[in-house]
Image (tube, rainbow, N blue to C red):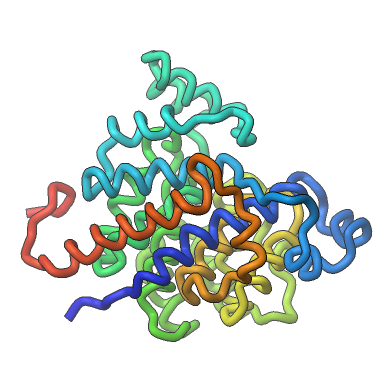
Length: 325
């Protein structure tokens, strides 16, 4: 019998990412020491953030594009995904320079594939594919092999480097396992990730992360940078060292410094997938931006994506184009 994930975990994942992303954004680029000595307790800042509205960044905007594509097509279709990325694209959401070049070429009908492979030698190994992949882990959580393949397809329009692709696969896999575990089980969680991990760097990091506890340092061991292999496992570890607390996972991710919005977005997505939307403090949800593709739209996406998930799990005999045979 296929595992059944509750709807509240779909909602928790999408909203958990958006809130984490918005909470982390003001601290992007700051060192962990600067954050601590300037702002004090990150946990207090998470519980009582400044400003009136929590606004997400490119991390969540691109995640929305993946969710929209999966809802419309039931799988990653490259042309549709690129259309969603360009339709949603708002440079004010803090896109990186490489992403802006590729997305603007997509919108103009230029050679964006060539640019994706040439802007960075060997393709981007950044965490941009991982930061947006959570909906893939949710939709295909009953079939982890399919999670891996669909995550790869979701990465390819912008990320061609093996580390960038595998970072997206590991993040999607982590979301899938977190969402389908009735109660978080550390050994089983890391066992699933290690069982499908190919790159030696990620294997080493996952082995280290599996042993970390709340009192241990994460960033000094695993990293806090823009590169997928310096942030994906770090975000996973922020979740697994505070598996019972959304605020704990997100505040730990922000406390690492540097790429705080993406670290907190990934940690928030994982925590929401594991604990459900009820774990996200209501004052934070109420302050999440509401206009356009804001809180209400994310709730709508989560509901539609869950409907797709139920159709997938209720039809186990259905063949899919990305499955062999």
